[in-house]
Length: 148
Image (cartoon, rainbow, N blue to C red):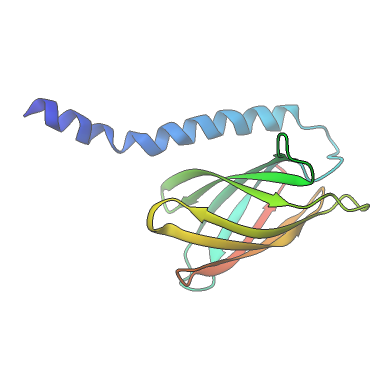
């Protein structure tokens, strides 16, 4: 019986392992980020809020050029809801920096399990990150992030 209980007790630790890995990468990115920021790449921290049901939570994002793929950026998200933190989702967005050093964010991101597909639409400058999101499950809202 004890052998069966131990794996069940470890299940809640799985999301926290992802949280620790993301937090370590995020902290490294914050320490390495040039100031002032020359473009939208690097770490971001803020929140999301659902206009569908009022739910909200913290949101972190690391933006970097997609390796081996020109004119594409990876948005690596980590989010929270209530006391929970979850995810380490990478959303690859096609697009290039504009001459004004802004990055349009537009594309779909399929999340694991029953969470569904999210469409994100917004713009990131070197100092602001504003976007809207919409889920194929009916949720929709905003994401607002600033530099940590």
